[in-house]
Amino acid sequence: MASKKRHIEIIGCPVDLGAGRRGVDMGTSAIRIADLESKLESLGHKVTDVGDIEVEIAETQKVGSGKLRYKAPILAACDALRKAVEKALAEGRLPLVLGGDHSIAIGSVAGTSHHHHRAGEAIGLIWFDAHGDYNTPDTTPSGNIHGMSLAVNLGHGDTDLVHLGGFAPKVTPRHTVLIGVRDLDPSEREGLKKSGVTVYTMRDLDERGMRDVLDEAVRIAGDGTAGIHVSFDLDVLDPEDAPGTGTPVMGGISYREAHLAMELLADRGHILALDLVEVNPILDSQNTTGILAAELAQSALGKRIF
Image: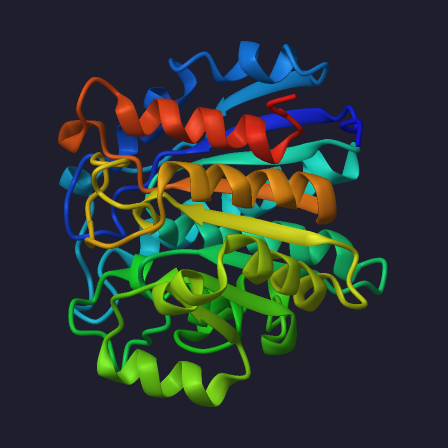
């Protein structure tokens, strides 16, 4: 299948306020210097890089509530990102959002959802992550908002975050798929079981393989929707393949499984927008994880082996 040529808009959102370890604010640069733009152009796409959303740094901000650390600056950054994603989509561009920690998906998914909501359309969401990101202020053990971002997009948690842009939820559970999970807090486990979200753990991937899981995920997220927002946390990979991430968990998906997932999405899923998050150069080795993120973007946008 020939890849559809797109006009891709690269948007950086260097938030590292939502995580427990610093450094992911440099992830946007790490992915860019892996020749991201030229690699996408080599596939025949037009690429526009609009730079980074302006984000406050922790040293100038108040932590705020221990249950919602750095809520105010995260909310401001996510609102700016929401507007940037909406603008890109309105101009016919595919947003490629570079993080930053996974709290930025509160803004990116809101932007995709709002754009299609205006046309009376729903969106699907495929969320690759070692973690559930399904905590709320009532359940969080850390207060880190990157562990709440999926719950927020599904309408649970802090009112200001949930209603970013004016409506909620941004996506329904029946159109939401979580892939690669292997580290859940007890409250997340129970919440996800009751939520209606489709969850594929690493055991599911081991037993069924990435192809079967991805085919089913695309059917679920694409059923009656305008397309799929893909939010990819690099910690879904095994730390041997992606060492530069702040919350590594052993036993993740392999380098080839990650590329297969992206290749299958390029073939079978109508990707509306793509997030690549949680690249931490401080913890990386020779930009291995930044390079991998750039390569995964290529696979999601049409690169084929043959």
